[in-house]
Length: 118
Image (cartoon, rainbow, N blue to C red; front, side):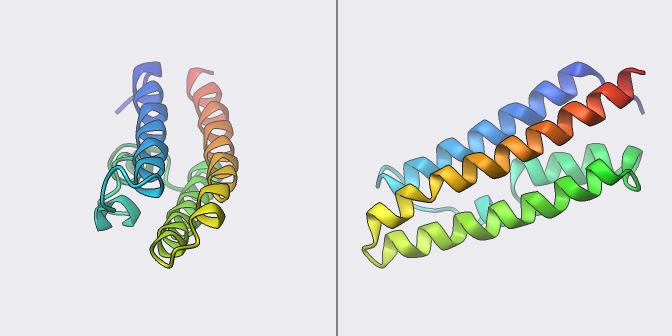
């Protein structure tokens, strides 16, 4: 199985969708879906386990990506808890850290994409 640039673009879209859904929850537009914070049910997590791990499971970028994703999902869940507790501004300000996690994942995706292209 070869992973092409379209696969990497789809992964980036899945990250944007996660951030958008979390932002919607923290702005009261939607209810949180537990699957959003589950590694196996989250769209990016699914892509990671079904597309990347079978091909590149032992590669350091993939292992780091999984670790950062787990941190991001846990932190996102903490933000929802803050929101539910009425600490809305604290929850919303935490979106900056979500952006940091997403940027780290994107950097790892870029490294892997370059390795794949070589």
